[in-house]
Image (cartoon, rainbow over all chains, first blue to last red):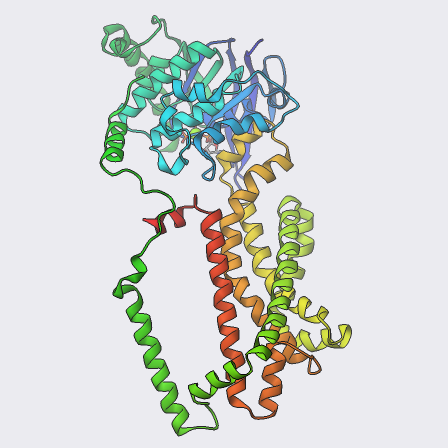
Length: 263
Length: 282
Ligand SMILES: Nc1ncnc2c1ncn2[C@@H]1O[C@H](COP(=O)(O)OP(=O)(O)OP(=O)(O)O)[C@@H](O)[C@H]1O
Ligand SMILES: [Mg+2]
């Protein structure tokens, strides 16, 4: 099945009152090929989340159009092709971890997708011992892992992640990146991943999209040509650092632009 | 998989201090620090009462007299208490059920909210003591006006809290399930209603004891009622039997406290997952 994301000429304008409007996305073109991992990075307020919400079908662009696997985002959602991992784990506090990650199976049942063996998937994610606990009884890192398992459980064609690791400490973060890559390797999905961390973007992605604000737009697309699997060792190689520097350089351009307009 | 440092620590903590079994009978209430303050307070209040009763026998009956009527006419009080309790619980059930359903309607349909909420607010600010006599005129001296008054008293807190709770679901949670195309009914059933339960219980804690107030107010304003503690109070006070008045009042207080206890136990069972409860159990 195809999980290609195609964004063409998308524009999104927010009415911010007093007759003012804010161009959150301006003429954004982006193609994410099936099965690739693409990260979006850019200064705060450049429209990353807006882009993700539009791809998820949570809001409609004012111009341009978006297809996911050839369908509109709403149709893709109706076919249970999408998985969303927000910045907070967004687990239901009254359900055990296992029940939390199994709930997606119970909703929108008409679309009977092949689903994962949830206890097995939880075990793979290192949550085997805590699957019967409540979210409040496990650490933040484990909660976020459960949120990722919940999204992967439906075998989505497209996984949309909005800064899923930003609230975690450095170690937990790196461990989760590794697990995400493992799961992704096994279950294969197209991933659109938003982050503020340059090294995270370089480590995870096939391609990095750099955005700049006011108006929100794409300023750069950088292919990351590093071998996979990308274990801990890779993080220390000169090639990895070279990519980090490159992305940081391009980002600086986006930030400069942001500041120039703000001042 | 790689185990991260904080989790190693968390695991170690679990080994050192295994989680307590969920249903351990706690004997901590036997400790004097738990019961002594209340016992002392009651002793002081009782002494004050007796002192007052000695100086103003026409205002306060001695506690002994109250105890005597209670034991001598135990059957009479139990019978009337049951009548009042039945009215209170009936009204409570009706008011809560209607409020629950309306809360769902109001939180799902904006137009319904605009139509219903102002009426509910007006109903709430109208003094029920004033409505009760009119209801008696309309519905007679039977159970109906009492159920209606009690129901109305219970209705508003449940409606307000429940409709607030139904809409208090974090946006990211809704977005996760929206991208799976969960239907409105599924979202309501699996997400909104459970997350509204803490709000519902906050209202029930108010409304359970309040239902007794509703029943008594209704009885007091229906002068021809044949039974109930409210009726017992108005009868006794018309005959100047002060001890009997206070005997009924004491039973009402106990009924209210029992209802509060019931709601607390229910809450403990159903909301064990909720933060405030988890804080309480530590
Ligand atoms: N619902 C909304 N109404 C009005 N303005 C909005 C709305 N959502 C987003 N915006 C504005 O649109 C711009 C882009 O927001 P967005 O959340 O997409 O940025 P972002 O790149 O995700 O930022 P961050 O890195 O801080 O998460 C911001 O200026 C934001 O204030
Ligand atoms: Mg964002």
